[in-house]
Image (cartoon, rainbow, N blue to C red):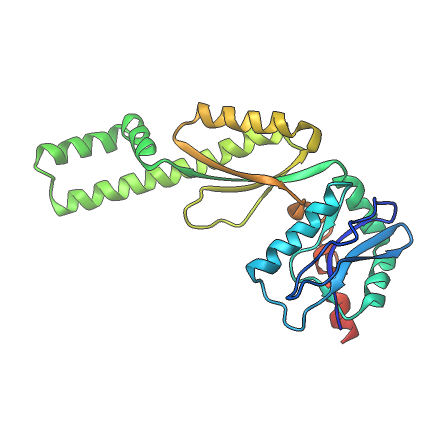
Length: 261
């Protein structure tokens, strides 16, 4: 049976709860594999591993429980190796990389911020700040709606202005976060969000961070922000120099599995 890996901790990390359950149906008991200064939080892996809600939540819960008593280097959902021996071998081979990341992430948590426009508020801003858009909209109203060509032209002008505003507001949010967090990582863009930013925040400064985000929200009421956290520092598990031949932290156990296969 293969070994599922939740995260990596220092061997000196506080013991985990005896009855901590992991993924699977029924849930697999969580255990710890130690190798030198490091340890891996693992369980037996189900025969079929799929991103079901129950298992995603179980993965998150294990990391939350472990992170309550010290720094954890989180693995992405689905990280597995052929067996326990492969896990401990990877810990030994990558000890320097893992220890560097644990030290870098000590005392931190990740907060994710997604931003989008309040549609009515941003349209008001565009009308008040773009004379050409405002003039054409007024001309169309006075002409009973305007021609189809004028309507299309107005729509294109508004869309272009909104797109430009999205880019500038995304940069505005990014620049506001940089001074108050340890690091910022831009996530994948998706429909409906003008910014998707992950922040590495000192746990002791989390309250000040959230206060600053709320102040930014009040200063820019045309922006709607969704904050999620504290989370394990998934977005910062890789060091800035991890794009190297042997692959990054997240790929370590998968690569070992492939080599063993």
